[in-house]
Length: 112
Length: 113
Image 1 (cartoon, one colour):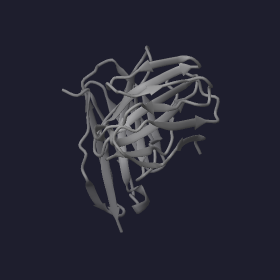
Image 2: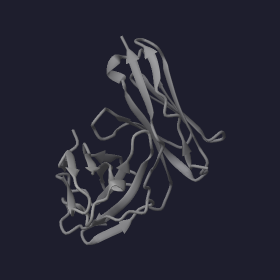
Image 3: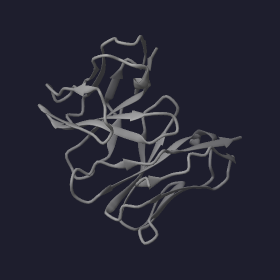
Image 4: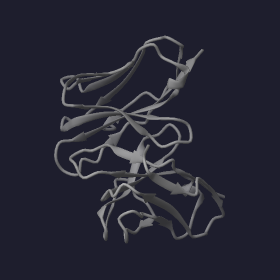
């Protein structure tokens, strides 16, 4: 079993839709949870960062962490064509090297 | 805007050639990383460094080697390229604070024929 599971998609939605992206994980030591966005032919860039459980909101983006279920989510409100990208979840434990473990990414397509 | 640069962006090369993928950052970061990414697959850590003269192998077994002679420079070398090395290689760096975010370069897409 992989430490981090993420559905690769693609997920295709119309402009303006609410998008839900999810990851599950098996390592209960993970404390830091991140979402990276990767446009085609670019490197990933950090979008959201959460420590432990709870919600975090930044503009149209909301990250949720449910440690009891080992489940994290990223919600995108009022999705735009410019949101079309691959979204990778990543997580790391508290302590040690803090090197994150990445999911395989979900490809999102927002069509006008 | 992250100041981390990778060259070349694309490389097509024949089997058996020696190649070096360049990675440089201007942020003064001590921690640097090399990841391998195949389409639709996870990023796999192949090498990392915590500073000058420090290099470690990552989770994914790799036939590549790295060096860290200067803080800003972290090149990756393949002594004899094979078709199985065809992949995207991403370089990243990170600041000194606990669990600071990774800054990624734009990657090198390597094709070995």
